[in-house]
Length: 402
Image (cartoon, rainbow, N blue to C red; front, side, top):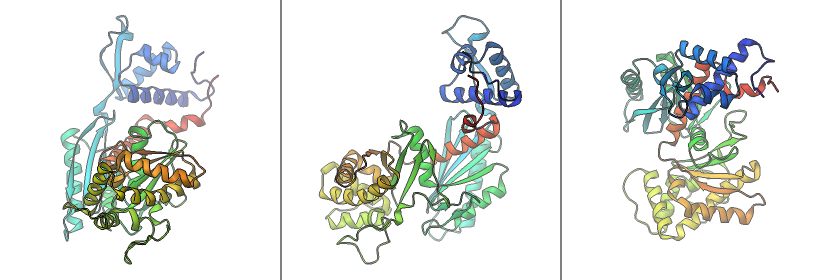
């Protein structure tokens, strides 16, 4: 039975069929006309017209022939045309910017990282970032990017797309976004960095088999990214997941000057204090590097530090489970990832003792570029929507043939 759409207008039907085929080529790689017919249920004539149209528009190209079918026109392999468009992703930290790029087919290309030193002029640094974006685009594509996505700490207001500080991000993050928007014709998107990490975890990491989960990010600070029913949830004002401000019981050893909530208990600085209290020698480097190193050592050696840390992390996980019931919580960020399976197991045990709601506790499978990976993916989504026409989530709202 054909799945061709007959109740939509011809223009909408063509757009839907185009997007369906392009999404398949993006996910599965090169396909023959026969394979596209099999996967879509579209007729031979519709597929033939569709492929001709996409080639004429410069969206796809022929890449050799398949050995798996008989010789003939159907043996041609069609793929997305990689050089047709590209995107840029940026991971904006308090002391650095990481830049990544990908072509429209999703192939990642070499990027770069720029550090801002103490006292350095933010405007000059932003100028260096803009130059780096132009250089990457020129060297790899000889054209400007189609979309740019920036991940930064803070709350991004959904209605305006503006970044609002929660005390962590420096002022130059908002200035960076404004400069990019003024300097490029591309759409410049801004998203909370933990939300982007959750998107990456959903597509490529520990939650790729889940439609609903929460990512608890434990790094310099603490935050959560929420994927519910396959979609990122930001909340009314963009503040969903700001669990770092969650009020938790005051620990006996808490310093008087600690930050409020979970930020002051499991962020980088308090974990360093915890490690020192347990008699561990910390390496040099940033606070988050020292904290992650201490937690990794405690996990390898089974030190009591890990149990104490797990008990506090469980407070945050418990809140997520009782309010959202995500079924799965992924521990990410430099510190969450450093504890590995040992930390996840202890957190799971502590949560199970106190919660009537079951939840798997997993460890992030992504490395340090989780935010950057999410930024590139988000920029790709937007670029494909503009190039291909119909967004994939819009297809669910359109009439379908039976």
